Image (tube, rainbow over all chains, first blue to last red; front, top):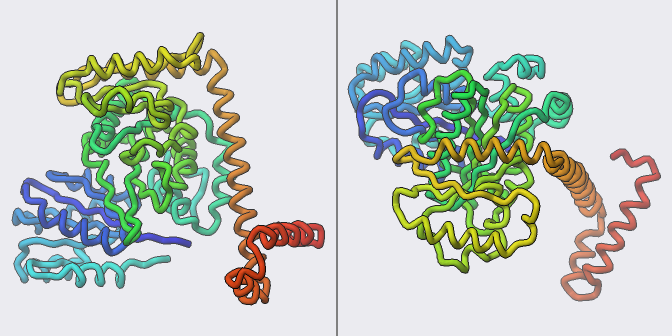
Length: 133
Length: 321
């Protein structure tokens, strides 16, 4: 069975910088994954709906706006409401270390990458953590 | 466990998971599809094809809007190319359709081609069936950006739109075989860019020269601009007219029958191919044979015939197919 990892790369909220998200999308594509990119200014509701319809394994959120402490929990809660909490949420962006810790410990994010993280480390993390069964 | 009853009730997660299973050629796929099959055949399948950047996704977005205006449940399958190098894909058609992300009457699924060369994925046909059984009355299938000869969509769609843009090619392009022959409706999108008249004339001349349309549906040309929101209403009405025409003339029935016969034979071919490979690899002396072929002591033409003969001989001996 030719299973492929599917990832939704999403930009929630109001920040308009998607260079990072596009670099990640491209990098995951080159690592053999199917990447759904939904563009800028997505609401948590739109992201969760797309994640469910596209049946992705991972949602990757790119957040540079500082609203991460609101957006991550909101998206996680919506996934849960829809019985889709098995979809992993990861993120990237300018997120302070203390917040990274709080988001992961709170269970709202499975992993968060901050500036300087290599594409390899992100690809490796996804390959290791997606359950291919 | 995925239940067809849940799909028929319109459970979104079930539909999405079934599509994944089918795409991945997962265990139980055939069983699932044969259970779904009796509940299909109701949706009107609209194909949207055309070159990269012609505006297929934006146009699809507009068609979703019209279909929702008529209160019809809509499914969209948007295909983008899979990388032949990495096997990955960037599926970006959804970007143009985000307005409908929260509409419960719209289900959008992106697919990579995964090695298929006809503008769609191998699994697209079966995904159409899932969305049909899920209750979508209109299913829009958007192909990858095509060149001249990725034409699979003509076999899958009830109504095929070929999306063009003004100024794309001279009149020779319109008389070439391939993409220009499969349209039920031509769409000149981005008509705000101007100069659509020349293209209209080229298309009309091409159609005039073909006796194929005498007394039958002659593909009309719609001029649309998603940017200025013009021509979409007319296009939507042409799509309805085409459906009505094919239903009344019996052409829809005929094309459904053609499609089904293709499906059965293609699936059988696939199975036979798999069994032939099995047989070929099972043959313990394969290395010898390959040596002989490489040394020109045997030839592929006779070996192929022998393979088929052996294969057929084995069937009566209780080989389970």
